[in-house]
Image 1: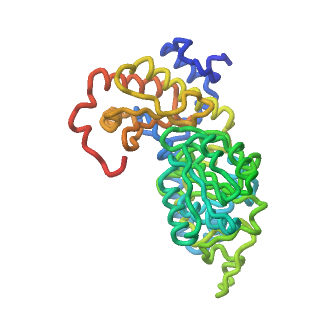
Image 2: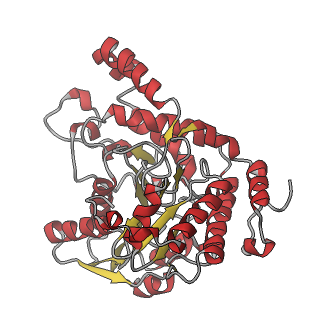
Image 3: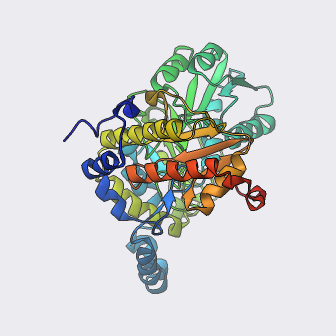
Length: 427
């Protein structure tokens, strides 16, 4: 295999031609993975960091499981189809992707609910301390959950918001820090926090840490246990392709399973849920973090996606992610300079996840023009346009053509069409 494929920080120095781009796709060891996803013909989908593409076979699988499991099997399917155990069995399948062991991961509820559960558990484990540390650029919902937990249950505990850099975060960790809660990859910039370094510093001060992996798992290697992480949470509908409303996950390090408790106590987290004991006795395993019955239909698409991921080399996945994002940045610089686009993501690919963001005063209008021309990214207030690069189904040719379309929109001022200034509820 030519070194043309492998990641190069100065990929534009090769003066790549369209033929070179086609060669990159030919050499791509992940190229065949794209055939496992069902995307509309001609669409360039660069929004897998917001909602992943549908794996092929999901509709047929849904129909089969609804027919066989619900219509025919009915209540028997909780046992016969393994419905009851799906939060744990799928959690065990997901665990290796995040460097966790079987029995440390549960597929359940939503990211916000799982942050609530793990945060309360961690605060109870550090009840003598009075600070929770996050960063100003964290995903707002995570901050909202922290605020709600502190206001309602731990009113003497303060939320401290650090700057966005690793150095600024580490500087705020002290012996009064109970919990550090951070998103591994920033949702606006794509910047990657140094998980190992920040976790180590938190532990040096006796604090616990919760990592939100929503924008990293499925796009780059994650190794929670090698970093000695305490808790982690995240969704499955972005890079993990489980579809809108797909279940979230939580990780609790095995060393904490005995002491960590779940405040949202429901029958599914009981040590013996079908004893129907009026007195709550939590399970001793990760299943103590269950609450109500799982929404089985939402687990089915995740099953099909995990079938794909279990065939993927994550080092190849990361190499391609870096190549795609770097190529996009370099091509935008080459073909779209002078039109007010400012790179908002890290220039160093080692510090960047699988998305690229730019700012522009008319970012909304530019993104709507792109979407109208079948290049799907998204917009984040106040002026950020985001492009997600999912290595499993994004090609190098997709990147080349997307930049050509963006260049055309800017050069011909297509974005000035009044139709593109109309705001939508969901951005």
